[in-house]
Length: 304
Image 1 (cartoon, one colour):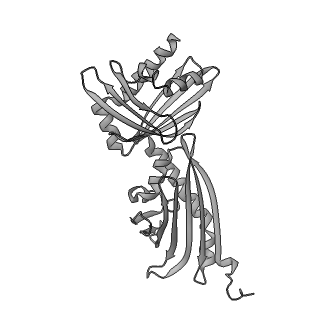
Image 2: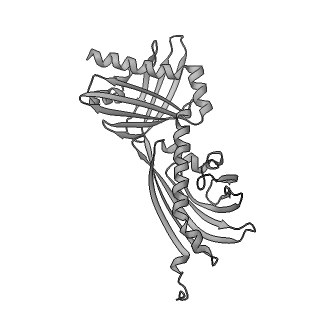
């Protein structure tokens, strides 16, 4: 039976929805979808490559990828960005074409990126409509293709996350409410913030989403370091996230995990690039500095 006028044959359209948790911060997962140097490495089924990956990531901008199968066959796809909310949401059209540019499938894809306790919950919804007689065969492979793509994406972001991060962890013999308070009290934080030999002056501290903490760190060599952060998330007493908006730029996540009356604290600083992370670690001793800062906090908590 053929479809009536104005209707689409059900075999000629398909919608796929899937959710996956990635062990990587959402800024990195979002970047993997919007930076062609990243996207080129994971897009498509297992063992496929992407010799062409072009992306003009702005509303109205175009993207184009040529996928190459293991047998050497090439499959172009392209589309246009409809909505970009960094790092939360992407909406774009998706068109599968033949070698001459003839449309085979036309559709729309929506991807959302949600924070999930330092990880990322990605939800993908994609719909495609066939415009050639053999489209049903292509539509049957949509779910498998996207599943494999997300598998490859997981491997890519989880391998790259440590290259841009500085992570410091310490267990304190104190309840997490007390440890959380030490991070959010403008008077208390000046007693321990910074590596050994540093002191800190707080000019403003407004611990709420959108609030600002401006402070000056005074080095033992007499050099002052101006800092400004903007709080993104405040979940008492579990988690703080903030953007360090003065140089060097980074996104920080601090988690406070209850361990039977003790507190496991994990500080993650995610830099824009691996090069920036290496520069901060090399020139400013950021890895050791973070460890010393938590050591000072531990000493303060031990004093009661």
